[in-house]
Amino acid sequence: MAVVAGRKQAQDLPWGACSCPAGAKGIVNSSLIPSLVWKLQREEEGIQELLLDTLAACLMEDATEALASRAVPFLKEKLLSANSNIRSKATQALIAVSIPLEGKNQMWQHDVIPILVHLLKDKEEEVQASAAGALMYVTVTTEGEAARWLGVGAYTVGGHRSPLAS
Image (tube, rainbow, N blue to C red; front, side, top):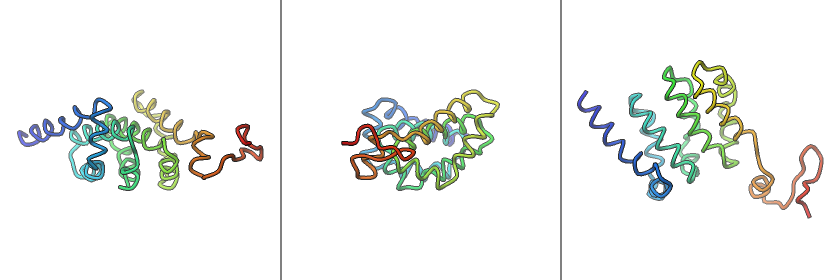
């Protein structure tokens, strides 16, 4: 038990560092995201909660490394946890992952959407709210975001040309 407490204190250090944007950016710039994703698969629940908090804050800065590290399937697995804190924190991390278009695509590819819909009926309100947020981000693509990812200046929605098209 003392080892677990010590590891939890050690894990608190990155969370403390990333609880502000500069700290999260430092973790991202140090290329630590793949290590955090890897650790998420192997740690006990208390450490997983801290890792998920750390990942969520860092992914708000930049989700690129997480997407390249197959974070979405591992976060999906955490949505099925019996621990409501882990379910909630995993949905919060998925909110950050689903901001870029590649994150949205991976969430669709890995069938995360049906699980998020199911979590809207979770007995814990925080899990419901986080699932709703993740669904909002994964289903909304802004015009500028689509144009940037598609490499075009305009696109159509429902057969209608974008009002920003020239």
